[in-house]
Image (tube, rainbow, N blue to C red; front, side, top):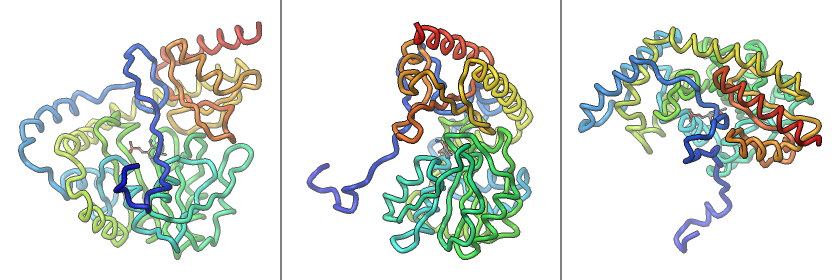
Length: 355
Ligand code: PMP
């Protein structure tokens, strides 16, 4: 800390992103990126847009919101585009929470939420998950507090049905409910259509995972016009050109190439089912995932030891410091070949561990 930092930030604990290794040879299954490259249409659109980088981007992202609105069945005014969905989450926490207005989240969920609460001095309260890692919607009724959760949840992959999410939104009409649908394209049920029924629902989404654009940083929020206006006010107060030209062009082209991305998501879901069965055959306990990752533990091997042993064999998965999930690793679902490599390594490590 320098002599100049405000005491307000003295206790801030930042988010710890997954490792982005320099070694190209590592098989990266640690940050839930897509194993598939962007479509040809996206590459061409980005190259063409790079010719115009001397000009600022459109701060309203109008063309992108029009394309996305048509795709989602909502009005462009019900969408706000941001620099990754982390930014829409940050805008939402600071717009709707303060020292007297807490956020309630599941005890195990996306690690960025408590960081945002800390940054904006928002009390952060948690509700435990059930033993099988699922969220119990009954525990979220009538809280009179803001609520945020990921659906499918991270790092477990477990999902609530749209009806269960609606129950939570309907039971908290006096506060905002943020439903983070970063992983919804891998088998979750979206609640986007419910924004026309509930003015307290904000759905956040990203192009990072299912649209292979993690490096482009494109996310968005969908909600009632008034909610979106509040978030826009804050966006224009901090980062008007949040989405750069090449990223906006990539988003429009990605929506046009939707069939390519849908096929990739379907392939990932198929590989997920095969990898889950194969891990279970090796004795792993694997949560029921609707996301592009599997959350797994093994009764015979410490989670951190497995993480290190895999790393030693060139495979990077995500292990979390949280003692409650010490024995677990989160494994991104890659291609079928990548998962076979992971499974072969896990099998060898388990055999060696037993010698
Ligand atoms: N929500 C969840 C649940 C996530 O796991 C992530 C990825 N770290 C994000 C949001 C943010 O993703 P991005 O900022 O790349 O859109």
